[in-house]
Length: 512
Image (tube, rainbow, N blue to C red; front, side):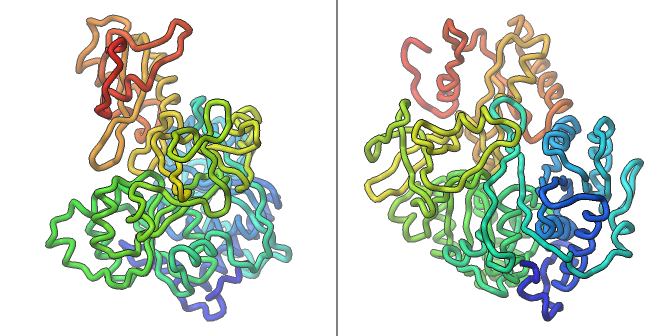
C-alpha cells in the first residue's frame, strides 16, 4: 500500500489541476501524506479514529485522504455546499477528532465549529480565527512512512429519509497493504484501467465515486487530472491538452457536452480516450446513444451505491443490445422482490435487492440499518426496477422518490421537514420533476395555510427560507401551490399522484 506504483521514480505526475496546471509528483504526494500521517499521531489520532475533510477540488484533498488511508482512520469527506448546522451535525455524529478545511471555506467552517467541542482545526492555504495552518503544522514533521501503517476507510454521509444525513460504514476490506485496491481492480477489468493512465475527474471530489475512483487511480500509479469545476468545452480541451485516457462522468455532463455546437465538439482531439464510464443516475437513452456515436464503444456504465452492497455494470455493446439497462450483477445477485420481500418473475417490477454483496451499516442508526434488509437478509438501496430474462437490470423509480439532480442525491423529506415549519405552509410535498439538463429539479408543492397567500411572493419567500437553512443544492427551484394535497385519512401522502402530474402520466379519475 502506498508505496505508490510510481513513487520509486518520483518524477511521475500524480495529480494535475486542469485549470492552473499545478502538478504534484508522486514523490511529493508520498512525502506530504506521510507528514500529515505523522500529524495525526502527534494529535493522538490513532487507528480507527475519525477525521473530517472539507476541502474543495485541489491536490490537498488527496494528500489528506491518502494520509488518513495509510493511517487506518475513518475519513469523512464533506460536501462544500452544506449549511453550518449540517456540517456541525456530521462532525459530532462521526466523532471526528479533527476537521481540515480549505481557506476559501473559512466562513462555513468557522460557523460550523463554534459550538463543537474537542475537534482539532486545520486550514489548507491560510488561517482563520480558530483554524491553524496545516502547512505550518507539518513542515517540520518526517516525510518517512509511519512505523506501522494500516488501511483506513472512507465513511461518507448520505442524507436519510428522516432528514438527517447518515454515515455509511462498510465492512473493512480484507487485503494486503500492497494489493491493488478494489476499485482499481474493477477499473482494470471493466474500463481498461492501466498503469500510466491519465484520468479526468470532472466532479466534486467529496462525492463517493470521484473519491473512490481517483484513489484507485493514484494507488495504481496513474495521473489524475482534477477539474476545478465542470465546464463542457473546458473538459474537451483538457482531454486534448493532457492526453486523457479515462474518465468518469454523470449523465448531466453528457447532456452539456452534447449541447455544444458541433463545430466546438469537433475542435478538440479526443482520440486518446480509451475507456470512460458513467453512473449516479440512469442516462436517457437518446443521450447515451449520442455519446456512443460520438466517442465510440468505450462508454461503460455501472449501478451501485455508497453502501457498497452490490455492483452492476455493462459496456457499450451490451447497452446497445439492452437499451435503458444499468447492467448485470457483478459481485452479487439481483433480486426483484414484491411487497412481502419475495422474488418475482422476469419483467415484473419490484424493489431491487442485493444478495451476497458487501455488508454495511448506517453509523449510529441500527433502525435504519435494519430497515433496508428484508426477511432473507438481502439489502436494498430503495430503488424500483425489473430484470429481463438475461439478468439485465432496468430501474423505473428512485429510492422512495429520491431526487437525482445533476448526479447529486437529494432526499425530499429533509426539505419537507423544513418547509412544513414555515408559518404560511399547511402541507408540503417535495418531488423531482423533469429537467432537460440536470435530469431532475426540486419542486415544492405547497398547500398554503391561507389560499389567498398563494402566488409569486410566497414562492420567493419560501425559496429564501430554504436557502437560509439548508444547502442551496437541496432547495426547490420551483414552488407550486395546491388547495389540498392528496392524503389518506390515516395521513399517508399519495406522493406518486403528485409526481405523476409532472412526469406526464395519467391520473386515475378519482384523483383528478
